[in-house]
Image 1 (cartoon, helix red, strand yellow):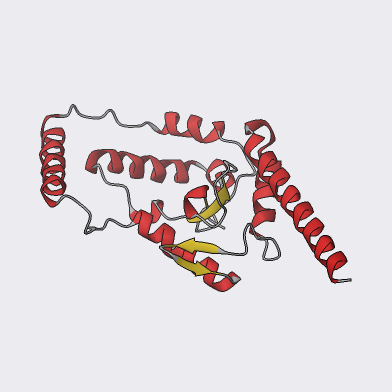
Image 2 (tube, helix red, strand yellow):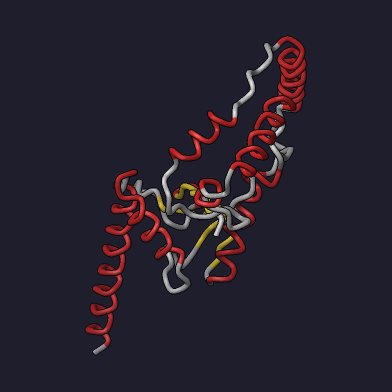
Length: 203
């Protein structure tokens, strides 16, 4: 009986693995022509009852339950997005790079040619070219809000974009998103975070 149960569990694991791999393959093969199916598959992977792996290894620490795995992902992507100084860095080279960045930034800001401002006509044409039905941003705004918001929205957005060009600074609230790990399906172990690529969503 134990042998039969072991064989059954092994077969179930194989079937589950094949199903996951087929799903990942479909996601990777989808393109702009079937973006609705792409997002449907991605959202299915984010469902609480669906998981890519039951164990995750980060910095030689193992996480083996849903809560700890989610926490590990959050820390992993936070580290990727946060500037930091590591012990393994070459401090001289690190300082040299920072100095180069400061010098190049000063040169760019002092010598660059004025950027031609975006017109309301150009922006409105650009907005109308986007597809409907896309995921909303962190504030639940969609492209439909911009398309049907009227001339006032176009006017304000045009001023905002031109201000960004002028100051060379993007507001932090325009750089917010939720990173969702998607397995690369490249033969690497699933417990390794580097085996995943990140897609960003706002829902």
